[in-house]
Amino acid sequence: MQPLSGQSFIGFARSQSTGPSQRCVNPATATELPTDFFQATSADVEQACSLAQAAAPVLAALGGKQKAAFLRAIASRIEAATPDLVARATQETALPEARCQGEIGRTIGQLRLFADLVEAGDWIDARIETANPDRKPLPKPDHRSMLRPLGPVAVFCASNFPFAYSVAGGDTASAFAAGCPVIVMAHHAHCGTAEIMGGLVVDAVRASGLPEGTFSMLMGSGRIIGQQLAKHPVLRAIGFTGSRAGGRALMDTAAARAVPIPVYAEMSSVNPVVLLEGALASRGDAIATGLVGSCTLGVGQFCTQPGLVILERTAAAESFVTKLSQLFTEAAEGTMLTAGIHKAYTDGVAARTSHAGVKVLARGPASGQPNRATPALFAADAKTFVADASLQEEIFGPSSLVIWCANAREREQVVTALHGSLTATIHATDAELIANAALIAQLEAIAGRVVVNGFPTGVEVSHAIVHGGPYPSLSDGRTTSVGSNAIYRFTRLVCYQNFPDAALPAELQGSNPLGISRLVNGVRQTGAV
Image 1 (tube, helix red, strand yellow):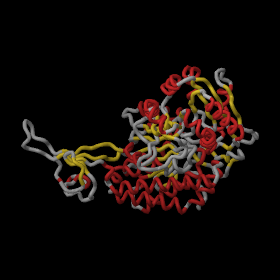
Image 2 (cartoon, rainbow, N blue to C red):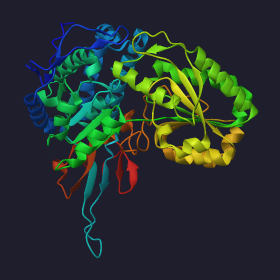
Image 3 (cartoon, rainbow, N blue to C red):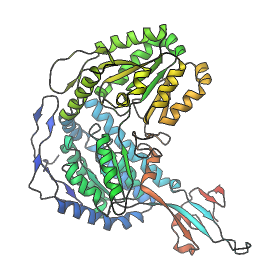
Image 4 (cartoon, rainbow, N blue to C red):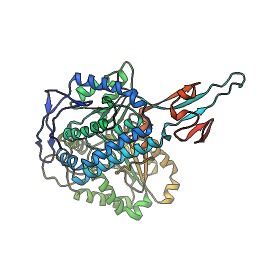
């Protein structure tokens, strides 16, 4: 691996910025790591956007096989560089090697999933309505439509996933698959990891013969460089994973532009878990063990961490909460990703501890070492929860809140009051699931993924996965940031009317040279028209 330079990638070139700069910090030891990382300049932003604008029509014209080859080229380079990536990321995040290796595998898998998708070609939703000049009272024109790329996309990297939601993560992969140039805003917490990854993407761009503006990566403050980028008129969309405050800032900036653009922001989620009596009576201890594992996995720093537990007060429920409290008390502390995340967690736990309507059920052991998070379990009754919206605010870390309901009616009121989440989980017997169709419909209305008799942490990357939900989990609850459906965020429909066949995109030509599935006069087929 070449020594880190600390400079942004502006197409194929490196920024020559001389300041301001920062160093990354090992959160486990609270010590600075060597290498200064320099903030990109306004001129860097302009150049990156200019290059992306020039690259956009070239990328839009690429066929699925060319895009697939590019995505696989990135994946292969990441695979080969895994040891270097893991070595740096473990220092910058304090994540264990196994977690980093697993996340790199997921990142590679995402790239190859999109490569397979665009190579097959059916995703573009080609539709053909043939002309009927004899139709009365007016002739019917020839209409053919398909999805086309939006144009340059800015991707803001996440703090808690240095690979899967970062430089070459899901937002970048899906934007590339759609045919969009990407300008990445690296996360300040793991700049070295970002620089290594950025270099791999640039190498893949070069090797694939793609234009220089296909990819750039900027270092620096999101409030300064990130806002300059978000305001730039060249941009056509933004992908973001992070806090609600950060996502809202980008949403407001994008809405205030002369030409507003979509912001696909994944923000906060409390991921409620509803427990029904039959499940608790038959396997309450097992649910408690699984739940505490899900709550504390990765020191609770997952967007799908279950932050609310909703149940009726019964003997089985009391026994379950006693067991859950014991497991939280015994759960080990862990190192959080950054000092800022640690402070936000301790502040959130302190606020909840001091809440008059909230009871502390359990606190794990604390060592006092830097940036360590102690698991915490709280409880409140349904009336208190429904009356106080602050109890729905996400505490990013290994903490959860038990909501005691006196009966099914109170449980319904609690679920009705819930804000949007990425996930909602229900533990129940088969008979209870059938008898509680209305409850499941309520959960479906507030979450993008409904989990039965499982736990929400662990997001499988697939064609069917939905990682999204109503606000504030996502800025646009109709979309997903994970899985092949994520590509649709960075596309728009274009209709071609009365075009000569030879002038049409290959996907819409009468002979169907790509052999893709198309909707022809309302009938799905793969043949010629």
